[in-house]
Amino acid sequence: MLYRTYQGGAMSPTIQAASVAAWNDEAHVEENRAAYIAKFQAVTPMLAEVLEVSLPDASFYLWARVPGGDDTAFARALFEQEHITVLPGSFLARTAHGVNPGSGYIRIALVATLAECQAAAERIVRFVKTTTI
Picture (cartoon, rainbow, N blue to C red):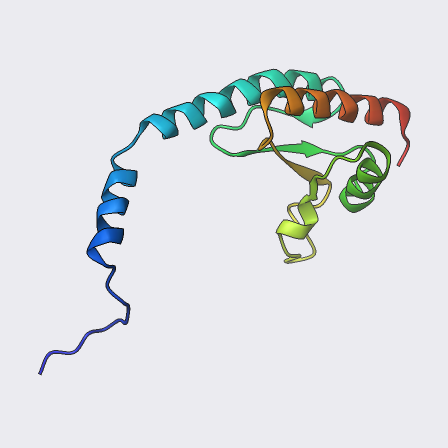
């Protein structure tokens, strides 16, 4: 007797056909990739004026070292004062051997429109220039 080593439900033919159509469409992938490249190229130099940040080799996010090193306090104050949400890097890693590799960094997701990302970057620059954490 032959047994499966896994479990799973088969997709209906309608869902399979929709999946094939979606996977065969690369136009939306190219458009999305171009949009992210434009956002990274516009926002990174602005933020680099006040934060240690550089273009990533491959990512949906920018990682920036925060002044003072307290990523949680920085993210909280940025939200309170500028209404911008970033994620403290220490939330994305765990401490091992006394070190949290995300500590002291924020993760910035460039998911909004180009104009909104640029406006947010301007507010982050203003925040860093005028706030002491």
